[in-house]
Length: 535
Image (cartoon, rainbow, N blue to C red; front, top):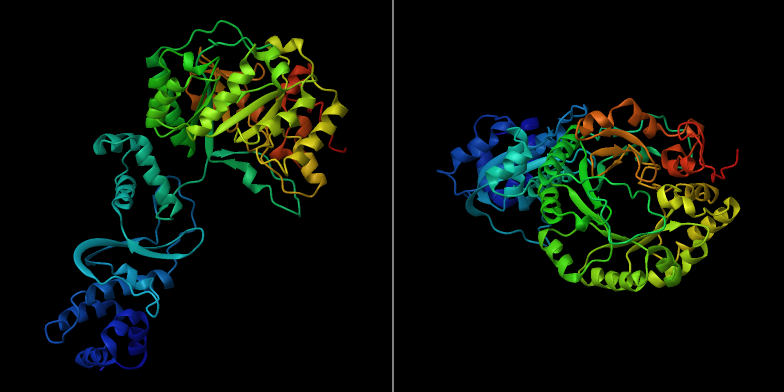
């Protein structure tokens, strides 16, 4: 008869078995065991008794699960080391059993919610502890779980896995991402990291703004455009890539994202990206490689949008408006305003997230908030960028500094009641600090993101830290994006102006390099001339 400490351990570990068997049968089981088996041996002992005692056929499988649950609950298999590559959670156990619904026994409140009865059918049960929440999980493995585990254990590249499974890389990466979120797999941290220390700030942490897990390739695939805007940055002749060359860029970007442990996003723009002759194929190719895809373009006929939608739904479609009807059409051409409103209605009908961008100048500053009200029920997101006096923008004027500061306060206040007003200008964080409100991510989610969590790729292969001013850091036709990103010059743009290095708002601000450049200042030494942070 099992007695003493061993008996107490068995009673504790195998509580579900004990409850299901009932006191009389449980006592018969214990009495039949004339030795004192270790708890780890108890499942096999139960199996050996099924011929002499009427026990449920599934009871030994249930006991195996209970023993493994006990191990994971009482042992810490977390090595504490950050993985260098995606790997299986060390606490995970994958246990083959011959009965379905056994995992549900561990989750049910048997007084209220009876669990499904076990059914004879071979399945795998997963038991693990989440690496972040430390919560305990047990459930039957799904095909998508087994796929993710197979890819990682056998070190299969997602592209190869997609060929084997006759599916897209996007589907494979979604399976891996799902497994990481659930804690089944452990993913190494992003290698997109700021190389600055966070100034101490007792009221809140700036740690989330130090690392990015998404990298955006803003790809200007063509200079061709159906508009002739008065503030266009670049109307130079740049020959677009052939389809094969563009495909090679996507493969290079895929390798970059894998190497940097980030998810990739390709934002197609131009010119008008839809005028690139191979747009639909390239758009689908980007999606098939697992990249998020978005479009910065012009109002587009519904039939053409339906063709895009058939390929894959974009994360968003962004258009530009420069104020109310009269001023907008002065900048972008007669009829553009009405076409844009109709297009926004079309995007809403197609359930595509719509964004509207305005280039802020001295002449349209007073139209921003009225336009925001007009767009309230038409667009999902509306914000502004300050004018960069590059290209044809040199003929327009920036607002006066004091007028801009006053406007910024009004805009930040209006955003509290108009849900589509997006906070984008980094200097708004000065206001947030004044109000002791939570910081936001600034221009790209991490303050100035130039050469940090995005780069701009031009039609001829030039890579710039930011499209709004000349900031050449390489050419993707001659260098890999990985090498360009890690170049000394790209690093200088990432670090931003020396004048901002010791600022407490550095991780969420650093001003606007394009505005610094527009004023004829040194982007690596001088601060944003509109900065109003007290010295």
